[in-house]
Length: 266
Ligand code: SAM
Image (cartoon, rainbow, N blue to C red; front, top):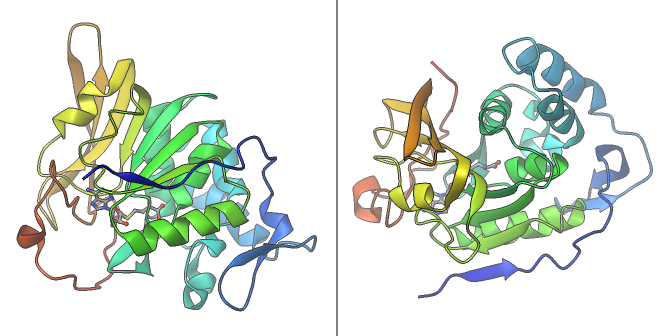
């Protein structure tokens, strides 16, 4: 069955709204507001302590992480924890990734302005928004229709309408959108998905967690060269499983447990 775009990038070219210009409505949707951003201090602390205080050194990554309002990508009940350096549940048994892991991954991808980037595992849409803040042309794929739809609405409301959200199995990439300068996978695969490697342009970078369904995972970087690939092991991590043709099967992961998965490096 062909994969259908959840929505086209209909607001392409619209200037981005900043965190200081948006607020959450009672129904959880975000809306524009010219008031101040009361989460700015917590976000600044997150950037300075949890990111720059560790090994996130790319100023463009730090700037983007300081601009995206993570509190608007989590459930109402989690707003108070939005700037803690931890993964948080977003419903459907899935999580928004830990800020450090998002920043580490994007830094490892060396994303430049104008790069064409594929994200597999949209989740809340947060990492896609950070990539968009860095000037990337983002295509993001989410297998869960509810999450894809919510992420689409949220990204539109926050001024990230240029991000293309596609509902479907991203484990095989998106041949119709390739080649990509960078590909990030936000769920763990049993091995490096070969179709993703072939959809990189020469010089392109893929960062993907690889290992067990629930444990024993490493974040791997694959760089496509003229001759083949260079593969590097970056970090031990714990992600939710990548479920799809080039990932785990539904029967292998069993029923959705709804448990919080952390993706802290160990
Ligand atoms: N990047 C997300 C964010 O910023 O909120 C976090 C992603 S969450 C850790 C992993 C996501 O990958 C889940 O939403 C899950 O449904 C999705 N996923 C798992 N297998 C997938 C597949 N084959 N294709 C697309 N999405 C997949």
